[in-house]
Length: 416
Image (cartoon, rainbow, N blue to C red; front, side, top):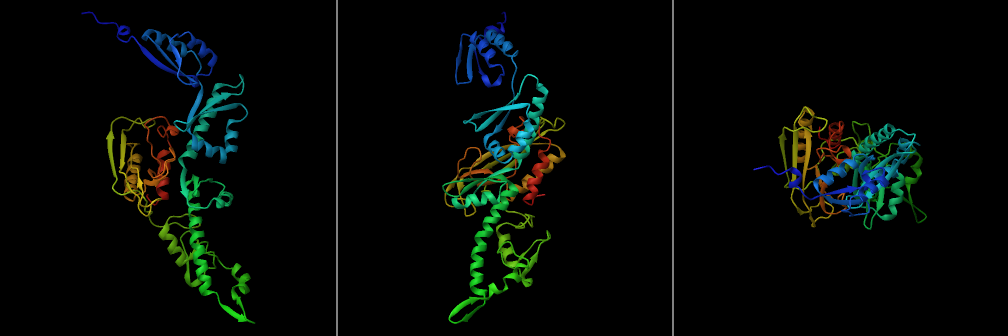
């Protein structure tokens, strides 16, 4: 029995052609116009149907067209870069390279297309700018975090001035903050200290301030010694002069009232001034989750000499507790898969992640930075590679600095 030719086995083929994938759009439309069975699916996409041979011929014609130099990035990260790093972005592009941005509302991503300013600009220069941008984006995105803080709307402006490295978005209840982990921790500590410090100062002044009566008027003796107090060391938590009898100096050389520091360490065991960690943080990851690791022989881009460690997390849905944003309400669980190279450094990171998971530091309950949904299990400032390939902008490999970065993130939480 004679074999059926391959082209006779597949008689109807359909492909999608995205206009944004090509630089010469007018020539692309001419080629597609010759394909009588092409129909527009969106403003920039075309569906083409035909026989296997017709589609192969069309593909060969499309290969002759130039393809744009582009990078796909997350829209929230790009918005932060524009607001806080516009000068670096413009310096990177210079006067020879232009960029075009195409927003995808469905995936909340932006396609950055890099173009030469004129025909005299070489393609190699455009590609160099693109690579510099990806490296810059990777550095910002790897240390960018999102959280919600409980503040009044009229406080947002003052806090934005005091913390210019952050981007603070007022919300109906509180505010959403985007920025580096260290700056967000500083903001949270500042808010906590102001809240608790105000209450403590009011109580302390009522109990400790000496009073004397003259001509039926009450006077405070604290104002008489104001100049003397200004020369003393002040506790940044209660904003009062530190008395020698209760002074506590940490290894980082910052001093506080012993009682104030004790209260602050209950909230978080870090120096309120510089953020140095004393002890181990305990996270708010929901209980009852599972973490498992397995090994594969296949390799990751950039680690071709090693196999792959696959890390799987499963956090079931449940009820929020006191250390979550909305105690008593339900939260939606999550299942996540991440990848590490099976190298000595990759194995070390795996062990650190296992310790962090036991300390409930990998996940938390809050607002998703990608979907914007509340009361869901989200990552908790320890970045994972959830894709095998695609590079940093797609949370994948190759990314030669990732293992060092994630170890630094773990160290900030006392896991090293």
